[in-house]
Amino acid sequence: MATDILTAPTIVGTATRTRVYKNFIDGEWVEASTGETFEDRNPADTREVVGIFQKSAKADVDAAVDAAKRAFSKWRLVPAPRRAEIVYRAAEMLIERKEEYSRDMTREMGKILKETRGDVQEAIDTAYYMAGEGRRMFGPTTPSELPNKFAMAVRQPLGVCGLITPWNFPMAIPSWKLLPAIICGNTCVIKPAQDTPLSTFNFVRTLTDAGVPRGVINIVTGFGGRVGSPMTEHPDIRAISLTGSTDVGRTVGTTAAKTFKHCSLELGGKNPMIVLDDANLDLAIEGGLWGGFGTTGQRCTATSRIIVQKGVYSEFVERYVERAKTLRVGNGLDETIEMGPAINAGQLQTDLGYVEIGRSEGAKLKCGGNRLDKGDYQHGFFMEPTVFIDVDPKMRIAQEEIFGPVVSIIACENLEHAIEIANNIQYGLSSSLYTRDVNKAFAAMRDLQAGITYVNAPTIGAEVHLPFGGVKATGNGHREGGIGAIDFYTEWKSVYVDYSDRLQKAQIDRPE
Ligand code: NAD
Image 1 (tube, rainbow, N blue to C red):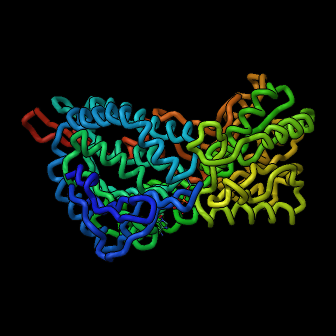
Image 2 (spheres, helix red, strand yellow):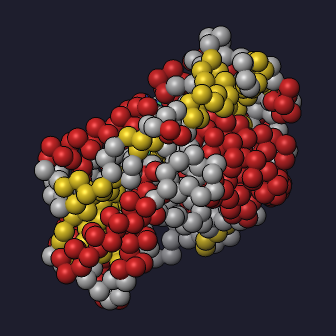
């Protein structure tokens, strides 16, 4: 029963009771086959253990896939509008639970409350949108080339889907995968990121409370190699959807191809924001701060490169840096805080490592660059908002995804030069342009190599009913959000009904 989570065994520590979360397989809460667990700690204060989770292995994946296979035989036959009603109910329940889940998310992930509320809201928006899809899922009906023959194409579910998620949007990203998958009649095994499993539990618990039957959604927690790999290899998983780094995407994509799975890869980014001489600078500065330091720079769409035209370069740099210095860093549960910690010690080390790389490459460190570890900061993974200026577009800090609060500012001559710099990179997720010139805006919309382009807004802030994803090393051509998700989680079947009562041969029986 889903509500068993409330009575799951607890460990009594010295100061707090820490809840132990089991895997969720076939509607039951079960321990991992390994007998091992791991801790989910608060990155703003690592003394707090947010939860204890199962360190699972292949046997747990196998059990979850078996459960999902059994559930598929019934779930695929539930009419899609009925499936949608459950998802709609879950959206209503999420609204009631939004504050509780946002606080849990800030505790396990570190981003500020305003943003975790946005993360839960994105799951709510996706639920409403996908509930609507349950009454659409349109397919074409089309005239046959032969008389007395009917032709149409219908969407069919794939079977068991394996979903592997990152830690930076711990409820929104699971919702982008789980909701279209189940609306289409599939069943799922989800492996949340090891840093943020609790938000997936909160989400799946709500779906279960809303009426998703046992076995339709199964959670197996643990690490990439021991859980993600067996999912990717499993012959009975028919689709893999991964959001994560480009390196992991390459491995997952290669392995999934061996068993001919549908495979959706949403990977890294190094997103450019172009500021032209005619831009509204106030707007560009605020947008660049939000895009660069929102979520501590830990968004795949983070504004990590700002390409500024020479006429406004000095003024932009001066004002941007002054504002970056004033950003309030701290525990995201405090409503006055503007930027939280890095997710873990490894990510903080990576961020600080790139500060050294930037310095050694000759970029000018204009602000930040240091770990914050005194006073209230001492138990968390905090770092100053960091800005490099006069960055050469070929430098590593301008080419590699850092995934932290480190922004590189690059000078450019004009729009053509800016687009050349923006495109000269392996990634292609988001992009943006600040200008008042509509001709330049349309040229950039056409020429920027990216899955998303914003005009007069920063590179972050996707809406759920539009396609989301990138080009080049950011993905493999699929899109989440909107109708693209329905395309990924279904397969087309063409159906012909011949009511002529005689054998008719396509392409052959035709009047001369
Ligand atoms: P990650 O690649 O380290 O991990 C992502 C998930 O893959 C985790 O659940 C992890 O356990 C699992 N994993 C790791 N190795 C695996 C393997 N060999 N086989 C199967 N699964 C494996 O990424 P992360 O650190 O969790 O997230 C940050 C990355 O995600 C960044 O690169 C960011 O750009 C990217 N991201 C992309 C998008 C997008 O939509 N394009 C959105 C958010 C994050």
